[in-house]
Length: 382
Ligand SMILES: *Cc1c(COP(=O)(O)O)cnc(C)c1O
Image 1 (cartoon, rainbow, N blue to C red):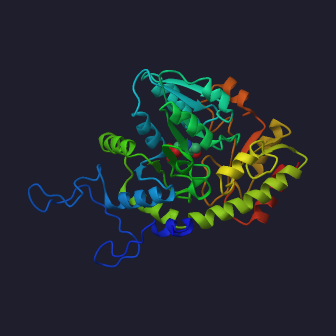
Image 2 (cartoon, rainbow, N blue to C red; image 1 turned 45 degrees about the vertical axis):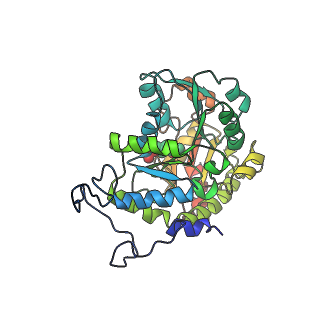
Image 3 (cartoon, rainbow, N blue to C red; image 1 turned 180 degrees about the vertical axis):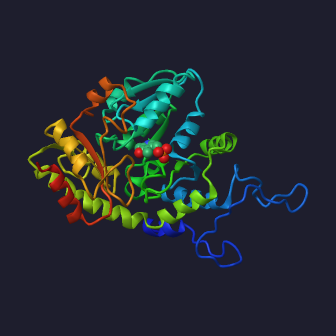
């Protein structure tokens, strides 16, 4: 029988004893650039750290196991992972992308990939019809985030995968928001999963990392060639921080979610809050899909307040929750998408998505829920 995910977080699918001859319980940090060869024509399996490093290989093993992939590659950031992934494509290729996307990915697509000849069409991928009607002869990939950032729209991964595979199109899913603890896109038919390892996987707001995970041998081979060629791999020390962070992923996700449910309920009842976007609320328009494809709801909440003034007031007055970008760490953070995460997105596009001056986003941490609610209550006052 397969191991449960909380066990896999700590050991991977196969428990490894004696990684070296000391019996070290914690996986060592192999802080080396190069490796000595035993003899001419022989290698220990490691030659140069840009190509591979044992500590990086270990975190890749754990992340591949968590996502039920055949291979995972660890990058120096989420954006390094996404940038490298797009090297799979060539000028003239067409890609359909979720319109309500992580701001940094939009910047990459619009300012780097388009210049390099990729054709990008943004659609609301939560509406399957918008995907199918935009597939062209030269469409090579569909790229989705679900739930989206910051509007929490949900795409049916299984349905999109089916549609994509009928036309030999690859499906890429950025799974940063839910982590493999709550969603496993490869098991639903996706070909590549992306993570900003900076977020829930590392979990402590203390390092930058990224992952690509795949279920396909051919893609694994191409991506391995790209990571060693572009030099975008994760450093040994950061690989170790990720290994350490992932060990508590299950515990943290349970707590993030329990807190988020309480906070979403508090916000829903608050007179200055107009709308709460959280995938754990039964009134979410895609609740049926969420129940089908996710095992939980995570800790990300967006909400609109009654005025721009209230929004700015909240950001000024929070004491426990910190006004900062990023997400997925033990500390609760609140951000202002219109001016922060989505500042580079053209204003018409931001407003069309509902990203206006009244929208705030919270990454709910693992502090005590009562303390977090008290902080929000005082910040929403006056
Ligand atoms: C943060 C983030 C990224 C980019 O990752 P970095 O580690 O910051 O480079 C990509 N996608 C999503 C959904 C993110 O939240």
